[in-house]
Structures are given as structure tokens and as C-alpha cells.
Amino acid sequence: MTSFATGRMLLTPADRHGPARAARLRRLDLGERPDASFDDFDAFADRVAAATATPFSMVNFIDENRQFFAGLHAPTGHRGGSDLGTAAAGGNRGGRYMTRDRGYCPHVVARRKALVLDDVCDYPRFAGNPVVDDIGIRSYLGAPLIDRTGIALGTVCAVDTVPRPWGRAGLATIKSLAQELVLHIDHREGRHHL
Figure 1 (cartoon, rainbow, N blue to C red):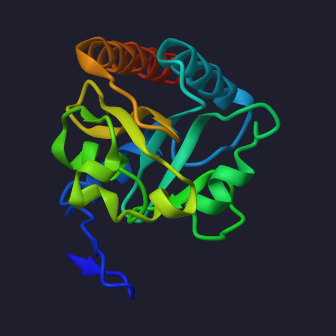
Figure 2: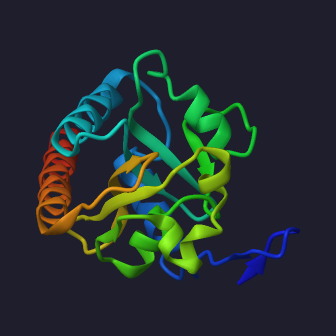
């Protein structure tokens, strides 16, 4: 547990599976953006945004130190995610990277369960996260991407700048999308090993 200079608590979950996840992501060639094959993840993020009617959605892989938005949907004019990524990364111009202490996806990966936050400000543990002030995130819906080996590789998530009553339908939708994406990753791995 660490605290901001402002005194607000930042509770980044311990990540005892980080090294195994990082090794698995390297084997799957999913920790970076090496080529156009990641366009599939952007298209998937577009589908998540459409299914959840949100302005932002991501396919997020998390290694020991940072998060990588392999798939990103942002409002028109923000396709590269530079505004979102720059703000999320605390001014880092990497665009598609964010440290593990920002956002809610590291919590989903550590918990290995979906996380539904209708209004992040209703939860003291999450209200102090930098994405609230830096990006204006007010609601979050995310599910883990648990692959065939049992490793939580990252998340699929949808976020909004206004509170959202996700309900059971939202939870079912994000879990279903996560399962679909895991099947895609498993299939992708099978093609690379032929």
C-alpha cells in the first residue's frame, strides 16, 4: 500500500503471478505492438465499446511493471489513444502503456474475477486512483483474460466518464466478451505453433 503526496491512498494489488504472466505474454508475443496483427485487438475493443455503449474500451495485457493496451477504442479523433494513454501514463508519451498503479485492470488480474464499478467515487479504495482525476474515469467494467494455462494475461474492459448502472447484463456481457477473446488468443497461439 502506498500513498499519494496528497494523502489519498493508492492500493495497487500485490502481483505474485507477475513473473509467470510476463513470461507467458512473451511466449504469446503479446507484450508489445510488433506488427499489424494487433489490429485484431483494436477491432475487438471496438466491439466491446459497441456492446457496452462506452466511449473507451481496452484489451489490456499486464506484465510485472506496466499495462499494454493491445486493443484500444477511444472517441473519434483519439484512435491512437495518445490522449488517453498520455494522461493514463502520467504524461508518458508511450500512448498505449500505463504503469500498474493506474487504473483498475491490475485489480481484476489479481482477483481473477470481473470488477463492476458503477461509480468509482462510491468506493474509497478506487476513488483515489489517478485515472479519476487525470482522465475523468467514473465507471469501470472489466473481466480477466484467463488463458488455457490458467494464467490471467490481462483484461477486457469498458470505461466511461459518467457513472453507469452496469447491472447483471453488463457483467454478463463483459464476461462473455472476455471468454470470446481468450478463445481468439488460444487460436492465435495454435496458428503460431504450426
